[in-house]
Image (cartoon, rainbow, N blue to C red):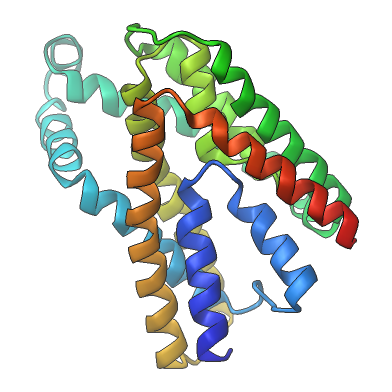
Length: 266
């Protein structure tokens, strides 16, 4: 992989992982249009995933630290800690979202991976993401709190993001907003629940390296990871700004445009 390819793919991964525009769709369409092989370099994929995960930890390090600390202390009295500490409840909600996500991957992985070869399907699903985002414009600002039931629904929504063209951040934020969760809480929860998902994806891909050890080309590897990290931090800040203003639906027009462009170029 050339250094410029690594930088471009790292930028795509970092921006589209968190902007509600589907990172998988951009990688599929990027491969198609530019002829760049985004998949196949397993080591590169692992490291850019870690770069995006670290961008979340960087912006939410206090919250992540508090969640881990309170959850570890809750081992002895989990029921009492669940009622007394919001961070313990949040860690439980994140765990709930992982159950349907993990089951979906285990049961449907081959079929889901086959969808990456269908460019028309990817473009069609970008329109679905756009529609979900556009409908948030009809929602007034809400002040509802997150609970276990809402978290499970958000986890179920996250399962659809295995399909290329469905944005993970977009569908989870929308699922929270549709359930009257406060906008900032919806965005925060979407990003925090992504940490185990992204680290899990990196772990799964990393296990593949055990069977097929890869030789690292250091410059593209480091460049792609750093670019993914920096662009990830920037993307999270942009999404938070749009969500707080109640204007996340503006990303719908981008999804419609990219979906239409993909259909025209295919």
